[in-house]
Length: 366
Image 1: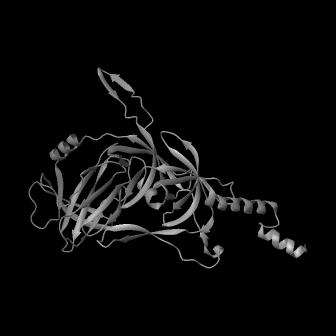
Image 2: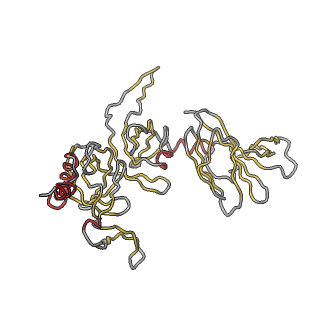
Image 3: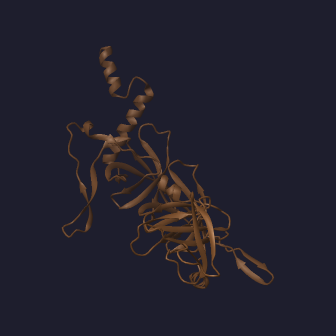
C-alpha cells in the first residue's frame, strides 16, 4: 500500500489524528443504531423537519420523565410535517416525503438542535424540552430532555413547558392576637424556551394560571442555562367576589378637555404628556370612562385598555418612568408597570378631532 493510498484511507476514516478517527467511528455507530436499535425514534423539530434519533432512558420519577437524546449534527431529513387544510377547510397537519438528491450523502443537512429546543417524539406524540447539552460529546449532539405536559400562550404563541411540583406539602401556621393564618407556600418549577418574547414576559410578580389555579413568579433564572428560563412560581390567591365589590364601589376619575365653561367644582390642570402640554378638567364622576380597563394595577402588572367602536387617534401616558407601552393601535393599548412604588399616572386618548379622554390609574403597593 502506497503512502498516498494510506492517506486517502485515513481521511475517509476521520483524519490523521486518532481522536478524529474515534469521532468518526462513534458517528458511524450512532447512525447504525438509528436503524437497528430498539431505542431509536423520530424527532419532529420546531420547523417540521423529521430526523432519526436515539431516546435512551435516564431518570423516571413521578414528578418528571427524563431522557437522553442523541442525534447527529448533520443527517438526512426523513420527512417534513406541513400545516394545511382539508377539503372542508379544516386545519390539518400532514407529512411530505423529501425528494431524493442523488447520493445518500447529498441529502444530509444540518439538524440545528440545541439546548432550549422543543421537539415531538413522533412514535408516541409526546413533546420534549432539551434543557442541557453534553458538550464533551464531539461526534453528535447529546443532551438531556424532559417531557412537557403543559403549554403556555404568550401573545398568541404557544410554548411547551416542563413543570415540576408543587413539592411543598406542609402548611405553616401563624397565630397573633387570637388570629390564625397560613402562608401560601405551594411552589412549582417551570422550564420554558428562552427567547426575546419569553424574557420580556416572565419577570418577578408576573401572574399566570396553571391548570386554572393562580400562581405568581417569584424568581427567573436567566444565567444558569443559555437555552432555557428556569422559573419559580408560588401559589397566589384570587378572590373574585372581593374584586367585583371593590370595582363597584370605586369612583372613577374622568378627565375631559375643556370645551365649555367648567363647573364650579372642576379644576383645570395643565400637565405634560410625552413632551406635549395638555390642559384638562378633572371632575369626580361615578360614570364609567370611555376608556375601558382596570383603574387599579400593581407593580410589574400588564394591563389592557381599549375604546369601544371605531376611532382614529393616539394614546399617551403621563409618566414613562412608571409605565411603558408594550403595544398599541388606534383603539387598544397594552401597558406594563415598571415601577415598584405606589403612585398613579394618567392614560389619555387624543382622537383625530383633538378631543381628549383621560383615565387616572392607581398603582397599588405590593
